[in-house]
Amino acid sequence: DTGVSQNPRHKITKRGQNVTFRCDPISEHNRLYWYRQTLGQGPEFLTYFQNEAQLEKSRLLSDRFSAERPKGSFSTLEIQRTEQGDSAMYLCASSWPQAERDAAVSYNEQFFGPGTRLTVL
Amino acid sequence: GQQLNQSPQSMFIQEGEDVSMNCTSSSIFNTWLWYKQDPGEGPVLLIALYKAGELTSNGRLTAQFGITRKDSFLNISASIPSDVGIYFCAGRANTGNQFYFGTGTSLTVIP
Image (cartoon, rainbow over all chains, first blue to last red; front, side, top):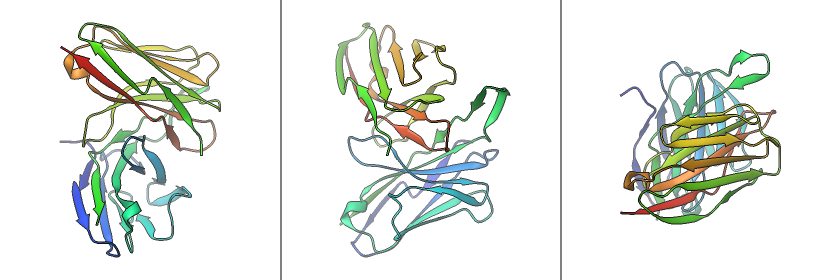
């Protein structure tokens, strides 16, 4: 399977514990994104990496959240001191560099992994 | 953040019927993506649109990039039971790399 993979698929933890999720993007993709999705909502952007550089962070990403992509391949998302409000599906997506087929258009398609479902008790 | 209004919120249709859904934004976008998500899974990319007015098909699915660049439409023809799921639009503005997602359209196909 050459798609985006995420581990674990499910995580149940007690409030106050730390959790870490892993994302392995499609191997040729240099861009990696983290999203959070709650029930009945669309994915919400958390952060974005180009290679190992974290280029954008959402205001949703509080100081309890940290993401890394140390070698520009896989990425980890850590949540410290989890709260019940952190319960959600955490999605990872990857994409090619933004290619330009002509001067006016740039291409940037994101492919998602299966997600990690976090439940904080 | 950016809000995308997606409608309808839910649809219940008979197998074989056509489906239309749309997405509107308050800002101009240069990219529209349409995804389908099954319960407990990540979204799967269906169609990508990059030019105003562009009409793109993927099998029974057809999507259009609105002329105003503030909306997009997805049509499904001759629906089948496996079309059941939640459909999301996502848009990206000229500045930044962030995609904003709609709240989804839940589709139920009655055999």
